[in-house]
Image 1 (cartoon, one colour):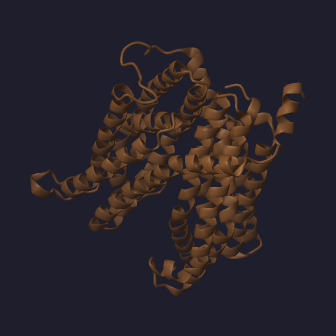
Image 2 (cartoon, rainbow, N blue to C red; image 1 turned 60 degrees about the vertical axis):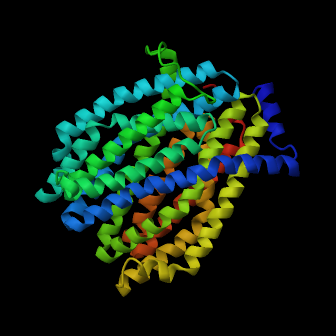
Image 3 (spheres, rainbow, N blue to C red; image 1 turned 60 degrees about the horizontal axis):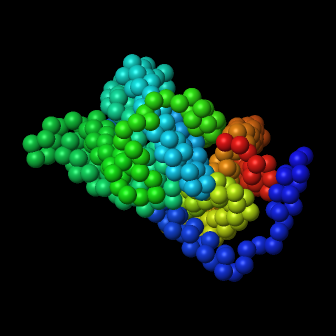
Length: 463
């Protein structure tokens, strides 16, 4: 171990920030976190609104659009990984006062997104129906899901621009602009869903595929607004419109060094999520329905953790760029404290209100009993989820995405899926045993991620 590493390790045990420093840090965290929280809610609303409109067309339409969205999400993890690498490097460059490097990183990330969109479009156009048939969907569902997937994948470049551009703004410390733009996207999507799905006011009646067209147009407007902000507005970053658009191997390598493991982590997580759902299928319809209800409710509890995770990623990257590793560490711990406070409150609410919350979805007494049990698990796990989400985001801000990839694989596949299957199916504990695997996953990841973060290696990573 080098002398520098020993010094950093010793500094990790220095006294905590003063009350004034903590207050200033908390204020900065909330300035970054609350717009991210609202943006995440608005992103969730996009899919919710689509299903509300499409739901009027029948069960096949709901199943088709739902399946198409799930498959598209698996393709978009490539953009998500790219966005993580871009945001971490932009934050570090801004912290170092190197705007030129930040602008260069953002431009290279936009170019990579454009190239990736070509591959995603090709997959969607050529293989949509084949992929959906392999999953066992009926011909009617296959037609709807395939049409949705072809439209969204063909114009996936708009989603790439949205994710990379928003990541650039967040890395520079601007979380409000992505929130406002996402709000505009929601308004446009609602109007176009009404017009295009049902053919109102003389517009063509496109049926379920109309939701894909509406979402694509809305996101296209959002992508245009993001580009306008990046290239025209006087802000922390203002990308030059001309020059610097060639591919630079060293810059691309730096982005992918962080972004590729982040994308792989998302793939590992989402495939593991599907495998975990498949275990519930083995138990029966009531168990699967209860689990889906619990997951749908829990989606709202995780949003504060994601919001403070965005703040932690940004501040860790900026402070490491400014050569302030202690400040980076303090930022992450303060983000965790704030995120944990909000999630613990959510946990209390879930436990106390579980009877009411579940009955919003169903009046089947068997499903209600199982879903309430799942909500108890979710309520208990809120602190563990806060640690896993916020501190893993802090590690990504430092560029330590390989570690989070390994921890996610261990937690999701070895603990959640394998242990959950063992307890629920092999030992016959049913859905209770399956969810023992779920909570054991978060316990495992929380311990591993906290252990990694308390070490000093992430502070000295070269990115």
